[in-house]
Image (cartoon, rainbow, N blue to C red; front, top):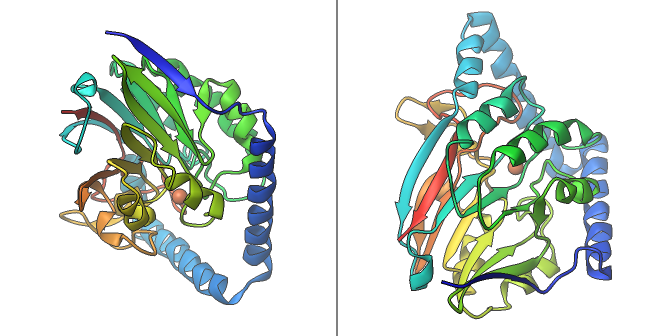
Amino acid sequence: MTRERTSGHDPDTGRRSKWKMRRAALEWEDYVAWHRGTEGFWLYKYKHQAVLLFGALLKAAGFYKYGYRNALNLRARHVKISPSTLPESFKGYRILHLSDLHLDSMEGLAERIARRIAPLPCDLCVITGDFRYVRHGAYRQILPPLGQIVEAVRAGDGIYAVLGNHDTQAMSDDIEKLGIRLLTNESVAIVRDGQRFNIIGVDDPHDYYTDAAAECLKKRERGFRLLLAHTPELYFQAASNGIHLYLCGHSHGGQICLPGGFPLMTFLNTGKRFYRGVWRFRDMTGHTSPGCGTAKIPIRFNCPPEVTVLTLG
Ligand SMILES: [Fe+2]
């Protein structure tokens, strides 16, 4: 069996600089909208306040500590999936899917993630965004814990990632220095016995989607096409552009769910039915990770955090 990795992109080219500038402008617009308020953002802020109030009520009722404990009770889940047109050389290929690490949300979270993934050998590791807890401001606090996780990953073909809506373009170089290849509207190919397995990574569809991301999706590389995006909200465009496998996160599987796992919120504007687990749309298979961390309040109910090993077959 022959294996090689190909990449048509050097992160230091002008294309990456242009991407940073575009993303920085969008992040600034988001910051201004958040702090000064715009029509759409007032509703978002009210929802945010409602979640915080819910957390305060739970604290008063004595349930908060159970939710906090649940949020640290990370599990490893193994799932076999059968995406269409998988090349023969990639049958049995194992992808470790991590998402929504939110590493600065809870003390000790990175250690737990590292412990959980250390005994999980895989071929490829993908991280579908949201390394950070806060949406704006400092990010360097996530680098040491992220380094711990990278050290624990045992993926022969490396670690690939996209940014989420809690991340900033400013962290991109530091993330890559740790050994993670960030995909910014571009693709790389893993080749085995002449068969190509393309990994495509695009901008966050929830808050920071761009024309460059839409163009990237349309490229139709030869061979199998795996898409990494922060949320499942691109499901229609992805299926229409011949994506075979779509890995994403953002929804946290609902994070706070009723018994049986019914979510009270999905954090999604569209594709809400793809809020957790393996799904299918037309010929495309998808997996929405429930994530490792938490957003807004560090608690979970009826929706455990997880790292997922997807075996392709
Ligand atoms: Fe997110």
